[in-house]
Image (cartoon, rainbow, N blue to C red; front, side, top):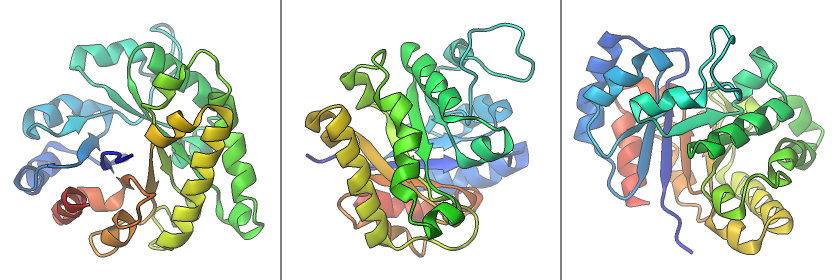
Length: 252
């Protein structure tokens, strides 16, 4: 089954009106064709990005809280996204797990809340350097996925709409990108786990992408792997040559 290539541009805590203006030419010159491309700016800049970046670009947010609107200072709730017609949300990024201490339980609750509000989830999973060195990658991925895979509130149909971003923590922002063949093997393991817990059909439909020091020089090597359905790009997404990654995705 052919799955549509998906590219995410995670700006993290980087953004300004000047940056948006600077990036508008390279983004709008290299429009998505065959690929879905979603930009994740800081929430303050969602509206400006929607005005600036032309369709078919989509704009998402980097995090939400699982509860409904209320006394949660500093948080966004899923309902707020409706006012901006924003569909995509990053969930479980390693920086949220490490810095904000979001647990697998928190991430499962966020995922369930977003899906119940018909939002599109990008679920980030991945092992750190110590876990990788100790050959604990599969164990860590199983733990990160288990509460979501087993959640009966999420139907197979809705689960298949999630984009899973496999981001080994040791490759994020370090300049050390993993070997494409090794990434492909890990993605095969993730897909097999989904097939075992959910169904083969669900596993076949779901898109699983790679993230970790992706740049214009190495993006082709990942996109050529049949099992890798796209890329979640960090630092390279706020540079003028990000257009080269979009071009590569359009050819994938």
